[in-house]
Amino acid sequence: QDQLVESGGRLVQAGESLRLSCAASGPTFSGRTVAWFRQAQGKEREFVAGIRWSAGYPAYADSVKGRFTISKDKAKNTAYLQMGSLEPDDTATYYCAAGNAIQSTMRQTSAYAYWGQGTQVTVSS
Image (cartoon, rainbow, N blue to C red; front, side, top):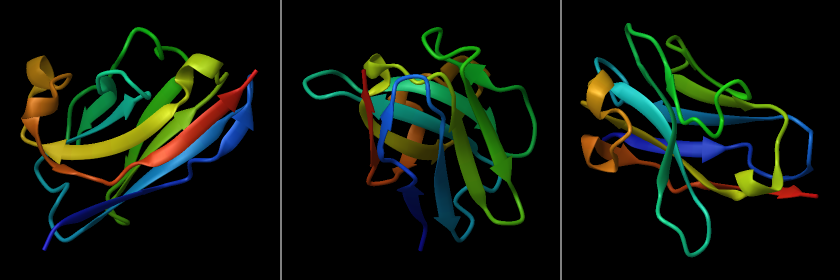
């Protein structure tokens, strides 16, 4: 039984850093693509960052490039999103996802079959 659980979200001030974690049970990440999405209230869920579990280069949304870093710990079956220089516009519920996305489809929500419940990140000005 596969399961994704996000953690690490909290209230922070603008300019601070935060690391989110996504722990997977079973083979969820094995041979798949893992990604982070976020959804602000009243808005569509948008891609933040993604990476192949076993190989490949990460991809980032333009809005977070240079500030966020996606990483993985295969031994712990955990993905991370290191967020720096946080801005109020980063406020959202952050979700991790896993699926069979390739590089060209990594930004699409439809490419992911497994989703966590989300963790709230709030950035105050």
